[in-house]
Image (tube, rainbow, N blue to C red):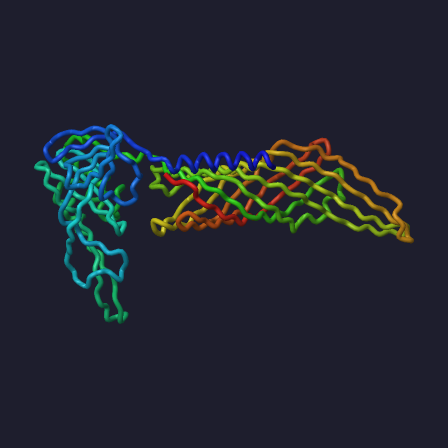
Amino acid sequence: MLRFCFVILILTYSFFSYSQSKIYKPGWYVTQENDTIRGEFLYLDWDVSPQYLTFKKDDVERTIHPSDVKNVVIGLQIFRSYVGPVVYTSFSARDLKAAAKIEYVTDSVFLSYLVTSDISLLTYKDRNEKLHFFVEDQTNELSELTKYEYIYSNDDINGLLIQSVDRYKGQLVVLENSCQKLQLMLRDMEFSEKDMTKAFKYILGCKGTYMQYEKKESNTKKNIYLLGGATFLHYSINSELFPRLDRLDYSGNIAPKFGIGLELQLPRTNNKFSVILELTKLKHEYQGFENVNTPSFSEEYTFHINSDYIKVNTLVRRSISYSKKSRLFFDFGFVLNLGEVSSYENIVRFDLSGTQTYDNDNSFLEPIGFTPTFAGGIGYEFERLAVISRFEYGLNGFTSSFSVGSKSSSVDLLLAYSLFRK
């Protein structure tokens, strides 16, 4: 147990130290005077498009704003600076305007190229976490593909409703009005990077235009976290050789569980699916009891099962995001219980007067190496803290020489705290 705790502490310290370090990626930018400056950029894996960038050259850092440069390249990402009008978006329905017209605000941002060719597609996400898309023509002029919402009064329900205007679909048709694939796609098209990129590639294909660049989401997001809580256990034994074991009740056991986990979000699924690897410690003791009364004596029978596991959880997580800070998720997969299980029985016999006449301990089941277990669960995360409930079911065999098999099930109630996200 102490060795396992020491390993967890070392891993935690290492991951936490790594999370505090700055990550730089090589890149360059073009100034307004058309000079190219090469160096490194502080990379933050932006959820919202950056308003400024931190650039380092010869160990000297400086802040770069959109008005300072024309273009920026960081790793495999290409940005274009933009200062000008963008479609107004609201953070919530309460902020929507009661007018069926587009409203604009002035913003200063870095637009990220999604596709480049004779005409190019760019995007950015504003402070309200709303997406914007722009088309760059052959003269480098920009025009926004617009979608806007407004509220209006509905007399039938005596209230307000939200109306969405998908003007961008008509704008895409204007770019190439004879593209059949685009026409078929527009009905169910969503205002997302995935659908917009797909539609734009259809347009370029119908034009017969060569696509020079397409943004690929190659960075796998990582989440390293600590978890701990309680495990509620149930155990049952099926033994042909020792039928008495079948009658014993092993329910009602509670044991502490703690460990560390790693989540890898899969970018090609829009981070909706993740692979989870957890290492947890679980140590517990089951006890089954039975009292036997006969005309000549009474007997107290106790059967003990001592388990000492390091559990390796390999799971797939399906996330449903409600906002940048919260998500609901579902876990399913399997668990390997690495460790040992040892067992012994204790029989105490009394005569009719209540005098103890027999007391015997007998160890007769051998330990095993590992047992597979299936797991599923649900959880909710807000910022760095998550609450998780999981159910595990496994077939835990002992040694075949005794013809003893067992089944175990458990319910975990866990808290997880994120140490590091990237």
